[in-house]
Image 1: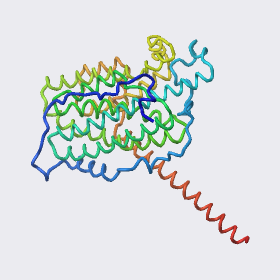
Image 2: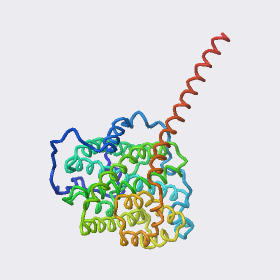
Image 3: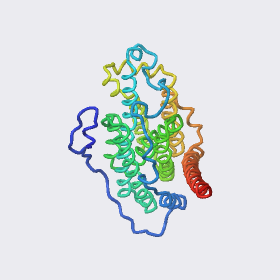
Image 4: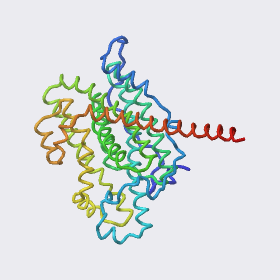
Length: 368
């Protein structure tokens, strides 16, 4: 089935064309590189995996309760709008909410794939080109598995959110080679990584937990890559050049904050998005969710050296300044550990099942 048959509203079949900006850079130094970045490249090669084989696609998913999370996660829960919904409509709302979230994930991952390929072209250093090449493959895998999940398990797709599209456009049309790093590796990937983590930790359903745990294992490397490359480069920039990057971060963070409100969902249910904005601001769950979404971005922005008073005031205004105290290294190590533990648990369960089958055959033979 074509994805266009699953969109909640018509989406044009022509491609979205973003004009190329900046230079494609070749380097003739093939035997030099930063040890940590080359180690990350090696890790990127070692950790490649096949979503067809690693994901258990036979797991059943109820499209009306994909994630198995409490209904308090929905912004209108407990309001007059929620009370008016029938049980069938509440199930449809859960489907729309999950579809919207994972649709933005797949659109963002396509943006990450294109941006990683762009970084291969534009970054001046060979070690960064090497790593970006592995990331391009990672992102292709993420687009593949999120697309399959939406098609086969959720059965509905939302168009790209305009705020996400705006940030992608700004990221890809800037001619400076570091801006795709800043827009994608720090802002878009940082927010996605945090969103994946929240859902991974609260879902009670095994398939979405698998998808997100394994994707996050990759994304932890991607954010580390952005940090390493930008931290070195930003030490060399002048105050006016740093201010330009800070302006980009500030605008991008506000775009990301507004994106997560999911206004498109409420329009489909005949609810004024402006009213839902107020509900989102007053919802304890949504406040917690929004705060956690910046848990990867804020410490990363601080780590790469964009930490002026203006940046700090912005995060204070958004209520996420305390996230600067987060240990980004520990969070990313945890992401990798969770994926490895999930693999170990699945392998142990499969081994136990095979052993039980063998024991049953032996017992039957002995009885016969």
